[in-house]
Amino acid sequence: MKRKTFLELSSALALGGIISPLSGCKNESPEMETASTTVPRTNWAKNYTYRAEKLHLPKSTAEVRELVKQLDQQKALGTCHCFNDIADSPKHQISTQDLKQVIGIDEENETITVQAGAKYGEIAPILQEKGFALHNLASLPHISVAGACATGTHGSGVSNGNLPSAVRALEMVNGKGELIKLQRGDERFNGAVVGLGALGIVTQLTLDIEKTFGVRQEVFQDLPLESLQENFEDIMSAGYSVSLFTDWTKKLVSQVWVKRRTDHELVDLGADFYGAKAATRDLHPITRLSAVHCTEQMGKPGPWHERLPHFKMGFTPSSGDELQSEFFVPFENGLEAMLALEKQSEKIFPHLLISEIRTIAADDYWMSPAYQQKSLAIHFTWKPEWPAVKELIPMIEAELAPFGVRPHWGKLFSVPKASLHERYPKMQDFLQMVQAFDPQGKFRNDYLDLNLYDN
Ligand SMILES: Cc1cc2nc3c(=O)[nH]c(=O)nc-3n(C[C@H](O)[C@H](O)[C@H](O)COP(=O)(O)OP(=O)(O)OC[C@H]3O[C@@H](n4cnc5c(N)ncnc54)[C@H](O)[C@@H]3O)c2cc1C
Image (tube, rainbow, N blue to C red; front, top):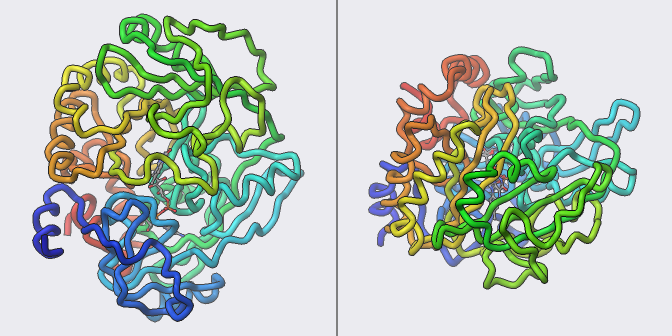
């Protein structure tokens, strides 16, 4: 299919892209390490080819400021792990791949300050060596701190905020090329942290850290749906971080991953967990795949950064050949929302690799899917079958609409702009902030036009 045709077809779904075999996120040849390339570059999943013709690789905040001043249309690019066109620009992308230093660890105030492009998997061992930890991590450590925070990326845990909830301060270059510093407590800070890249280019973030802790990861198989219904809150609260994996069939949750801190009081979970059986070996969430990609399980204690993500740095996370969607509903509606989807299992299952269910504590970030609502996140790792997935996404959103669904900003969705405006009470404040930070619309792109902006 020709690229133009595909984009036209997919525009109604806020999605776009073609599969390009030519290159990944980063251009590998040295001559590409310059400001310009016409070689197609794709996101991680290779389902989207960026339209921006030029990729810029600044090496300092000063260079970012110069670029922002010189260029008209542009957008920040992290590690390219989004599944849609959120990180694209009609003309220029500003990559943070060369902005990844740890600027400092303040042991007394328990913070780490990093450049925007630092990956969680890179800073975690540095923190661990100094005796510190982050409160939580996503399923994969391969993503940049700024890119993850910009979309509200999360792990799991009924008391754990998403990754942006650890941000204490940030610096960003706004559309005028000015360096803006914001910290927790500033009114605009709550608009800026989950900023979708719409306000500027974040150059530096300061994150809360805490004393290091250990985690044991135990996996249980085949949790009866009936038991989940009866014990939903207890199961989701059975550890520091709990994930359910299901393909929605056989009235079973295929795997329950329970991650428990070793500095918390631990009871023996035994071989039978609410009717699910303790796994006898390490497992991949997609049971048939090799667990070599996954962090260690079987209750063996290990440092936080080697247990909280499901996937190891240096290994392909998830399946690699996939699409993803994720939807957030208020936690109190979570079980009912799951049951509504379970009724659609015959439609969903043929195109699904696996679903994951997680919890996220409420936060105050205007554009966070967990804004002022403790949430249940219902995630879909799809087979790379776009024509079928494109049909399923609106069906799932319709099932979840009565529960006030909010989509993951970095994954595939089709919730219309009007509904997004209804479901984000601070949307108008955010749009005013965009206008103030980027009066010329330098960071505008198709995604923001389709999902957020009125004109
Ligand atoms: C295998 C896999 C597993 C995943 N697991 C999870 C998970 O467990 N939980 C979850 O919530 N999500 C998950 N995701 C989604 C992913 O974490 C998010 O989409 C995240 O935003 C990707 O970060 P990135 O650095 O790749 O950002 P990019 O995709 O490069 O960019 C994302 C957005 O951030 C903006 N941005 C990037 N850098 C900056 C900057 N310096 N300043 C301003 N804006 C910036 C971009 O403009 C864009 O809007 C997963 C994705 C994959 C591929």
